[in-house]
Length: 80
Image (cartoon, rainbow, N blue to C red; front, top):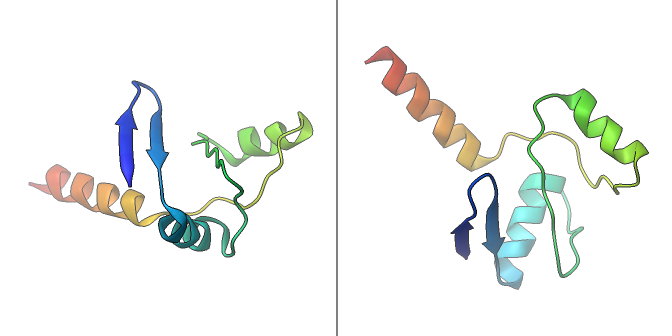
C-alpha cells in the first residue's frame, strides 16, 4: 500500500489483495474496479445528495479500522 498526502485528500494505491480486503471492510463485498474513489462526508444527507447527482454509491457509512484507531487516540489524549 502507498499513501500519498495531498493536503485535503489522500491518494491510496493498493495491490489486488489489499483492494479485496478494503472492499470487504468498506462495502461488505468486492465492488471496486481498477479505481476506487471514496469520500468523507460530514453528514449522511450530503452522501445521499451525491447519488442524485450521478455518483454510483456502492456502500453506506462505515467506521473503518483507521477511524476507530483515530477516535480511540483522540479519546485517550482528551482524557489525559
